[in-house]
Length: 126
Image (cartoon, rainbow, N blue to C red; front, side):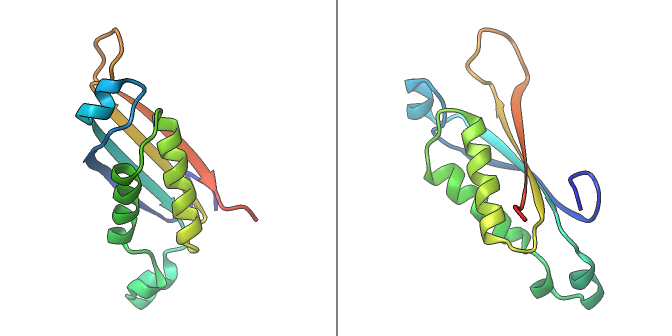
């Protein structure tokens, strides 16, 4: 199973206010971030048995994201995405691969842009 193939769980735009960024104002004011997940795993056992215990809890995924995004500080969103991806793979053994997209609307750059986003793709080491 590789990203873009197989079963997946998608959680879109988990919104949070956090203190990530290079600039002092970002650390003080806490800009908004949106974080989305794509998790590749075999959903057949959960679906066929109608049993969450054989799958992955969406609520657990959201909790993991928020714990990291709000509880830790990163200078760049690439590091935030890396930390989330590594944590999901470490704590969710059924997930084979994950894509974490961190979106930063209103990024502090000298241009008018709707948003900046970074997507990190990681897969479980075999």
